Every structure is written in structure tokens, then in C-alpha cells.
Length: 195
Ligand code: GAR
Image (cartoon, rainbow, N blue to C red):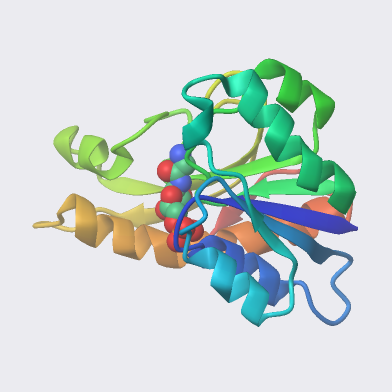
């Protein structure tokens, strides 16, 4: 299986996914694609010998259809079987998602269906939640919706800030996403629970 990974920034989840696709793993990375030419993850990918490209969203000025058409060019050329969104911070619209229906995965830093959207850790702390975490889900046209394929729970500690909680959740993201990718690549979409 060929896996394309979409990023916006440092790409630590992308790196965890790439580094997991070795040996008897049924998938291999075919492309790392960013919406920002300065995304740090692009260099990391190139350093690992993976084709990497950027389609800057800014010149499109809110014309999501035109941006998605441009994004689709390198993506189609890479012929992915699966697309992993890994810290990809642009909203994708229905036509793009329909083109890859059932083949786009996303990682989101909350225990979905709680806290779709942004500032998930601050919202979990403000709500007094005892636990936070992350979810990998299949992407559907609704934001941060779609069948959950795996979740990892992280206790909220007294004195936690959004930043300290995010750091601990990110450690679990790096375990959860590769584990879910491997199961999906093997044809198993039953939800996975960590730890
Ligand atoms: C991760 O925490 C990921 O869950 C989050 O962005 C971070 C990217 O870090 N994604 C979202 O908030 C998506 N709405 P990374 O670039 O180091 O993987």
C-alpha cells in the first residue's frame, strides 16, 4: 500500500508514521505534502528519502476548490492507497473527500466526539475533564467527524496547562497513529484503544 501524508508544520506524527512503515509493514510512504513551503516536516521527509512537495494555500485566498485542485496534482501523481492527515491544518471540502472516500485518516488531539476543532487541550482543562487524549478517525465531510479507528487516553494532572497536556498527548499520538495505520493497512478497522 502506498501512503501519502499531509502536514502543515513540524510533522512529528508524519515522522512517527514514516518510521513505522518498515520491514513486514504492508505500507510504504509515497509522498509528504504540505500546505506551507516552510513546514519543517518537508526536510525531515526528504532526509528519509521520501518525495516531499508543498502547495502553498495562501495565494488561493479562500478559494478552497482551486487550492484542492492544486493539491490534487502531486497527490494523484503519487497514486496513494491511503492519505494520512498528520497535523494538516486546512479544512478539506466534500468533493476532495469524496474522491478519496474511506481512504483518508486524520489524527485529532481530543477524545472525539469531544472537542472538535481547535484548542482542544485548553477546552478539556476548562471543562475539568479527568482525562484527555487523541483519536484517529476516518475523514468524512463533517469536521473531525467520521468513524473513530482508535483512541488513546491521557490523564489530566493537577496544574496541567494546555501546553503540558499537549506534550503528553503528543507522545501518545506517536504510538496511536502508527498502530492504527498498520491495522487499517491490514484491513482491520475495528477501533483500537490505548494504552
Ligand atoms: C498534533 O497534535 C495533531 O494531533 C494536531 O496538530 C499537531 C501536529 O503536530 N492536529 C490537529 O489539531 C488537527 N485539527 P505534528 O506536526 O508534530 O504532527
